[in-house]
Structure formats: structure tokens, C-alpha cells
Length: 333
Ligand code: TRP
Image (cartoon, rainbow, N blue to C red):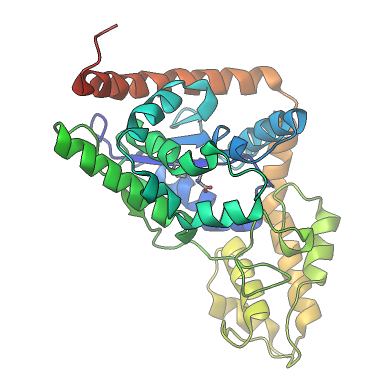
């Protein structure tokens, strides 16, 4: 809680690309929350350094992500938007919280184990410390809610454990955050392996729609989407995951129910369904892509927005950090 508003906090690593799945499953909901909450949103550019990045590419991608979030409609006058690395309190609180987190706790995180297996030549300290940095992100802002997907739930639980531990050892210092499960928010699956979530780290680009894919690429990807061979356009996630995914996408981007969408396709086949989904997605993304193309060229504006965001964020973060420094017994600077 800050002032009279509950705080919702989220961050995203600038890796891969922002997909249609991210947009329909997360960003769209996020946009609806900015009126009722103090919403704080960061590009988690320190987190993604836990795996090797090409510096020039990384810098450009981080900026592109920032511009894409603005292009989706995140409004800097309603929420705080910034780069994690611009607010030094994140790294500072991480050090303190490291001293309140056990090696066994971060070592058993599923993501740590997965990434260690994937990058066996680079199991660095940062990889292990990743969830503590994430805890710092959240706790610095006294966040009440953190919208998370299943893959980040374990990290949020650890965040809660660390907050409770610290609060019990000293006195109430951190708000203990809750996961925010959106009431609605479509779960979008890969176009190539419809049993799996549409993921920005999918090595097969045909599996996802990048928010800034040009229209002809979007049309091609939907044309190639995996379906099945019984030819029926019905919603059945278990037996017909590909077709059901296309129906979900079409219903979500057109703000209709799946049932009403299905009624459009009586007597029609998959080709028509794929064409309709492609057209609707292209239409939905058109204004976002136009905004993006304009914004990404406007370095001065982007800089102004992220500097202002970092300043606002640092004001909140430094208040929490001072409290923490005082409680653990550091001499006031
Ligand atoms: N670890 C998150 C992910 O990969 C990104 C993240 C970093 C985050 N800090 C956060 C998410 C704080 C929510 C809150 O998706």
C-alpha cells in the first residue's frame, strides 16, 4: 500500500520478443489495472544478465521492449515505468536480502535447476541469486500484488518467505505480496505445439506471433499453425488444442465469446478460420505497431519517460531501503 492505493508490481526480462501471448495474457489485463492501483512496471535488465547477452543487441532490445510496452498503451502518467538498472536500490537491497536467504532455498528453485542444466558452462552466482533480486524488486515498492504466471510462482513464494522472515526478525518492514491471478486473461498456446504456452523463448519463431511481426509474417504463421485432421471447428482443448487455441485468440482479440466466434464458421474449414484469426490479429496489432514505429524513433521522448520513471521509482525504493538499513543496524549515512 502506498498512499491510498494498493500497489501492483511487475517486471519483464528484455529477452526474446514480446508475443501475442504476452499481450493477450498479461499486458491487456495490466492496462485495465492502472486506474485502480499504483502500478509499477520495470524492464528487468539486471535479471537477464544472468545469461550471456550481446551488449549492443541487448541495449537495443531493452529499448525496443520499453517502446513496445508504451505502444501497447501503458501510460507513463498513470504508472511508473522504468529500467531496473536505473534504480540502484534494487542491487543494494539484494545484498541485504542475500543475508536473509539460505543457499538451500535458491538452490532448489525449479528455474535455477532448469537454467543450470541449459547453461552448464555458466552456472554463475547471479543465476542462483536471481530470485533474491526479484524479491528486492517487489519488496522495495511494498507491492500488494504481483501478476505472475505459473513459472514465477515459486519465486513469489520465496519472496513472501523472505519478507516474513525479515518482518519477524525486526518489525513489520515489508508488505507481504500476493500473487495476482487475473479474472480473465487468455492463455495462449504455441501455434506449432499447441500443448505448450506461447513462449518468447521458443526457438521456433513459427510458434509465436511477435508483437512487431509485419502483417504478411503474421498471416503466414497462422496459415502454418498446427491443427488436426477431423476438420471440425469446435472448442475442445484436450482433443483439439490447435483449433481451440485459434478460437481463443480470435475471441480475445475481437472481444467476443468463443461460442459466438464458432457460429461464424458453420460449414467452413480450417483455412477460413486461420484467415479470420490472422486478419483479426493484424487489425488488433495495427495501432500498436504504428505507435511503436513512431516511438522507437523518438529517443528523446523515450529517454524523458524512463528517466522520469526511474526518479519516481527511486523515491519509493530509497524510503524502503533506508528503513531496512536502519533496522539491520547500519550507521546512518
Ligand atoms: N522473473 C520474471 C520473469 O522472468 C521477471 C521479473 C523480474 C519479475 N522481477 C520481477 C516479475 C518482479 C514480477 C515481479 O518473468
